[in-house]
Image (tube, rainbow over all chains, first blue to last red; front, side, top):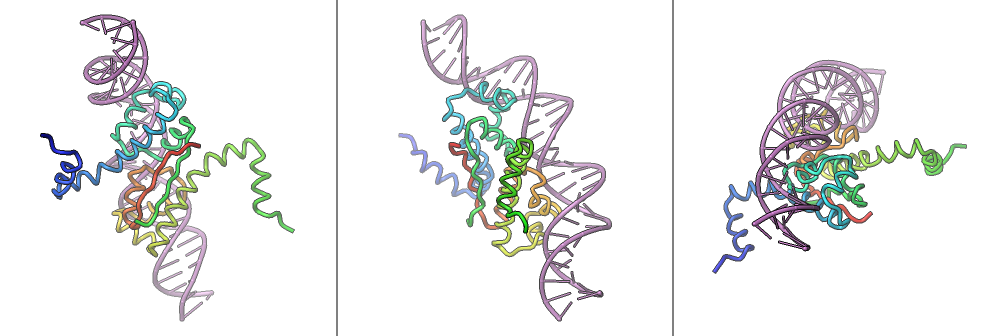
Length: 93
Length: 93
DNA sequence: TTAGTATATATCAGATTTGAGATAATCGAG
DNA sequence: CTCGATTATCTCAAATCTGATATATACTAA
């Protein structure tokens, strides 16, 4: 008898402190997930992608972990190495 | 008898060295333009937006100049202050 | 289980971005 | 043109990100 994830999430977010934390972290994870998707599309390992980008496997791991909010410069390089293009838009909220 | 801009641009980009420079700079300007559009939507001055973001007018000017490739952290703050949302995607090139 | 591959984490130096203040340049209204 | 507001540029310190190496953990196939 476990609590469904969505229910658990909803309850957690009802707590203002938790929500604040979540809102702060969510974008970082979304970006990380976007990067990961792009790499998975190519079928490259982190090490292979790192080589194409001229960096190290650990740097790729860090990017995909959501540990940092990367610079757009890095996003562009990552995109190029995964034969992707960066679509960036600031639309009305 | 001036040369139409598009023609001028096409000729310039035919030069590999120019093209390389252009490709490197274009993303920065696109991002800058995106930021500017978002601010114009709100009708805020740089100084007013700076205050909302908790930074200085000169920092906003720099962001909108395309001088740097900003961090996604900055993009998110800029978006919030302009009541925008950041849409970021790495799609197949 | 073990070996081999892939990914994650930790640390630290170097690079880039950011914040702030001062000042210059630009723009628009009157 | 002049004033006031807005935007641009410069400089430097502080914050953050990035690269690299070493090492740990996780995963898969045999």
